[in-house]
Image (cartoon, rainbow, N blue to C red):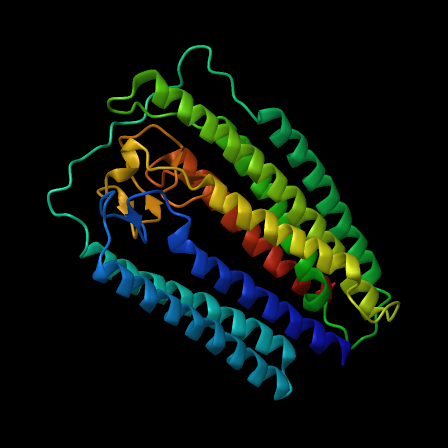
Length: 342
């Protein structure tokens, strides 16, 4: 009964994390944005408040539905299927709810909004990346720790009882190997991200963007280290649970999880700076989240939402990075089945 309980707790954790992020989403955007749509600095009134109330209600419904479906299937005798199905329901309903709300926000955008975007330019002379060293060190630490954890888990799996599935013990270290180094890589790319020429503010804008870029890079590095530590600890505890060496996840895991959530929450609020020029242009933003501009040489541009930068999906280099990440994801998903077959 230990394994189903762990799966239920993991599902609950996912629901709380995704649901909490959804509730925070409209509150951590740059000034003048509403669900990825630029509606103007002074937007407000009944329509905006009603859209926010509708969003909050929908988020609670999505969380409840995902948890109910996952637990119902799990308690019927299929805990792994319940965990996966509940997660799928959570993600699909969350995406549908966002797209529905985004379409309503589009109707609130001013029809005569002035284009504020200027194509991204190469970095200024003498512009040294800030936060690059921390990102490189973080990438090395996360890669080594995650690979070691995955290898240790594979070795320990051989000693586990036959009823313990490979998927239940290998997906966590696989997720760790995927997420933590990728976040560290994003921190490194962010530290080198190009700045944009902004209208009207000259050198002040350039310095403000440099500070923002460095802040985001360092925050991503810390988040990568926290995620690495959290998932590594959880992976170890799941292995020990499966080997019956312990019967709890341990106090340290819950303290670390609370610290990680608190840090990410505070960093999102802190980084929600005022809107910068090019972000006010709705033309190249798909669904308010994806930036696509083949004429922009930047691999990454400032996000419309609070934390960090977004890939330019019109840039070939960016698409190579995204494709590699997807390929690694699919490979790690297949890993438990390969280990089981061997």
